[in-house]
Length: 166
Image (tube, rainbow, N blue to C red):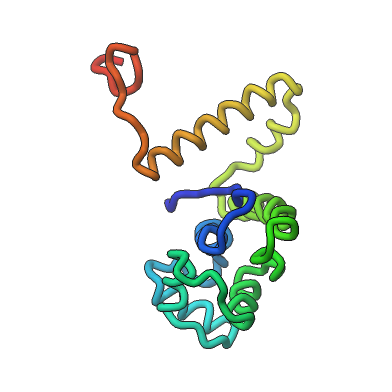
C-alpha cells in the first residue's frame, strides 16, 4: 500500500498539492500509476488534455510553480476537485479540508479504513476522543519523520522500540 497522507498541509505548495492528489484521490478506475508517464497518460486519457510526463514531473518536483490554466483545469477535472484548490491559501485551505474528508471516504469505500472504526470514533466521549486524536497525531508525525529520513535510531538504554527483548 502506498504511503497515505490525508491532510493537505495549510499553505501547501503546488507540488505538495499535486503529490497529495496522486496519493490520496487517484481515481480507482484509472489504475494506480507507477511513474510520471503513466500519470500523464491517465490524465490525458480521462480529460483529453495534452499533458506530458515532463509536465507531471515538473509539477510534482516543484520545478513548475505557475502552470497554464489548461493544465490546472485538467488536474482539477481528473481528480474531481475545484480549481480553487490550486490557488492561494485563503481559498485552497478550506477546500483542502473538504478533500481530506473525501480521501477518508474513498479509503472507507476501498476497505482501507473500516467503517466501524469511524463509527466508534464518533461514539467516543470527548475525553477518549482527545486521547485518540493525540495518538493519531503522534503516529502521523512519526510516519512523516520516517518517510523524510529524519527519524532517529531507537536508543535501547531508554527502553524504546528496537531494543532486544522488548
